Image (cartoon, rainbow, N blue to C red; front, side, top):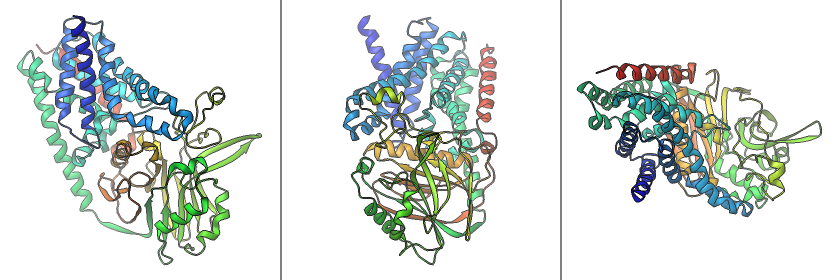
Amino acid sequence: MKNKKYLEFLFLIILGALTSLSLPPYNYLFINFFTISLFFIYIFQKKRSNVINHSFLSGWLFGFGYFLSNLYWISISLTFDENFSFLIPFALILIPLFLGTFYGLATYFFFKIDIKKPASNLFLFSLLFGLTEFLRGNILTGFPWNLIAFSFSENIEILQILSFVGTYGFNIFCVSLFASPSIFILRENRKEILVCIIFLLSPIIFFSLGASNISSFQSSKSFNNDYVIRAIGTKINLDRFYGNSDTAEVITELIKISQPDKETKTIFLWPEGIIPNINQKQLKEFEFLFSEKFNENHLLAIGINSYEQINEKDYFYNTLSIYDHKLNLINDYKKVKLVPFGEFLPFEKILNKIGLRSLTNNYQSFSSGNNREIFSVNEKGFSLKILPLICYEIIYSGSIFNKPNFDYILNISEDGWFGESIGPQQHFTHSIFRAIESGKYLLRSANNGISAIINPIGKIEKKIEFGQIGYIDFKDKKIFKETIFSKYGNKMFLVIILLYIFLIFSFNRIS
């Protein structure tokens, strides 16, 4: 009996690990129909047999296997600073164990809520997992990475549903869809089979509606901007964060990659924190490097650290700054959502005493900006409104803007912390989801990552692949309709929750 128990634990961990194969960059979507259905059958049978002593553990083990296999790259970021190397085993094991607790909570309440019918339990299972995923994405700093919904990242027709219900709403549906084949095995009457059939047919319906949405966008009129936005992709070593790179040399390389044309009005989009050893105000000192190639037709949008002193206290910010051709600051945005340990050190005063500091700078933790505001650029022929997102901020659904009164999302990132792992592809996938949800063009510039232009339906129009160097230009655009999700945000998630509660009680009455 003891050996059987351990085999069950191993079975749950393996199911979770195999489910990761449905995510980018593998995208073996159909594996979820087996793994999630088997997981649901397992916990439903335990619940039916009143075996409640493993109610939390079942979800926790599944979640551990899932996150262990798809978030291993977090430990890679700790290899760049020897002071953090002792944390690698903890990051590799403890983070998946912690994230697995959210799935453990889902199965715990699944066992506690007394509902008998298989179909009703399917809706309950989906609802609880959807709610805990929303919780995972919002408590503390939030970490909504690798939701099951990302299994559909290569199916942009089906992903058009994001423009209505958003990622969290779609995620609940995905759990239901992948678990629905289990109803063929667990069903108690023919009516319950309809649940499975409807869910299995729903991707076809979503595909048809999405294809119509895409066709409508593609047939709409194109407009030419009076300027080009040029996003560059670079591969500059992370040694620059530790004072091992020459500032002038890096700037010269960036200008060379950008290939400015003096006759073309251009906004150059450079990656996050790309220039070493200087801050926002000090960039002006390097104007001489720009003077030969840049003129009044050029603006520069760049990720560069900023600094200010308030009441004799120093504050540092991860900042997206807009400069004119003479490196006069036009506007800036200070990053709001910071990465724990990467950009700020929790309990910094205590951990500094044992030699720890934030990974991405060699002074103190970054401070968070007050709020994220859409800012305008009106400068000598340039007129646009920008929603700025720095790196990690792209992963948050429904909380990145209040009003959709902007033209483009500009996303800058440093993905070198992921190494050669699957991390950069996973990070990039969030950009597709944000573009569809907002119905806006998204322009991304990454160092050691993927740079791209993504249109409002989530299609990648231009792309610089991981590990490549170059630039891509954005000029032609289509005006797209305002999306339901951009207007109401995660209120649409609440609508889905209420729908599922109705379905739970409705199907529980079916005899």
